[in-house]
Image (cartoon, rainbow, N blue to C red):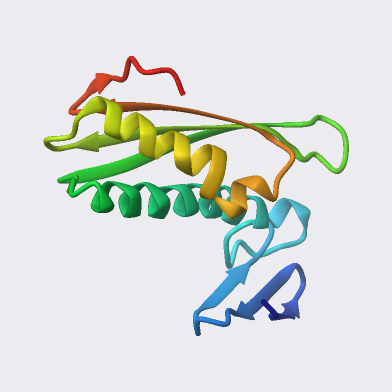
Length: 141
């Protein structure tokens, strides 16, 4: 995959993705930006969640399961010293619908441990939890 990211002045950058979408990045005003786009670290966490979310939906669909709603809550920890990398990322998957717990747990585990290329590109410790219809899952992931 190849991309070109261009500097838009001050701390702003934009890039066109191979799929034809534009991404805008910028820093906050306190470090010289104008808050005209997402921070790269925000995009990275969104990418991890989006990657695992797409995996989970795909796996559940293959199991002939169709969630009525799906939300992910992401928490993270970063190192205090530069490069201030992510050291831990936790994603809680909240699904709604007629979904057997063992199937949801399996889909989350497969995404986390096998399929999500974004998560596997990071050195952060990755953990996960889930709930179905508001009930916290009991299967260990």
